[in-house]
Image (cartoon, rainbow, N blue to C red; front, side):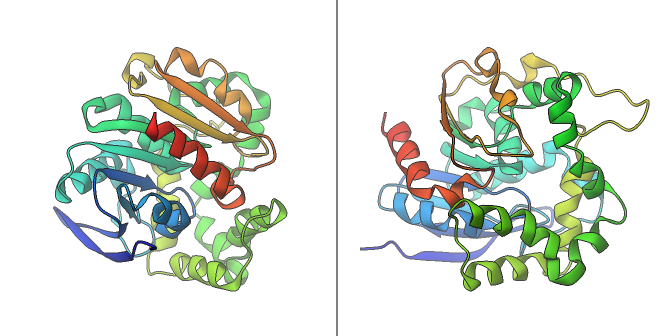
Length: 294
């Protein structure tokens, strides 16, 4: 029998209200989406694990139906991490398995390194560790060039450019890529994404994640920030799944990752892009299944 999936709102206090999808019962498994997605990217994975876990997938702050603070500073990592910890607490879970992709992965690295007592196991999909990403931006010209898109997404014109022609660019960078690699191209999926992008304030909220981040291609004459490796050391069991056709986050981000993660397993999927959850969902589910059972 397929577990029923429900959606609703969870109040975290201080005006923070997250829209959250849930299915199943038992120990918690939290799923964090990235840009420019929303909770629905995890639906198939959530339903698979719902017979054994309480699966929980929020729209993160700024996205879809969740709250959208106006200040760019409200999208700094400390606030995004607090949202996840407070959500788990509000739902009655002190510890949880954390599964995250893209920007969700960036926050998950921080959650696991800063609050290891809260994370049972960590699963990262195509999201670089902050120390290796800072290194690649500094020393790998290919990664620096691949990250140039961030300059547009941080700019004042980003909302106008990204919303033109019915979010044509956002659709091209998501569904346009995953369709080429066997991902879903049905109208219902795309309609859900367009509705999420079109929620009042959502486009600015999503873009503010880029504007608030210290990691991006540097402005002329501006130095990249130095990352304190000790602050981002991960001691919880970690599975990294990486679609090697990712054109924005290159496989070089995996080099030396074992210096920053004590108990690390890396699984590369050569025929998947950045959108590995959409393109190779069965493989992703099987890898997570094996990892959480071990």
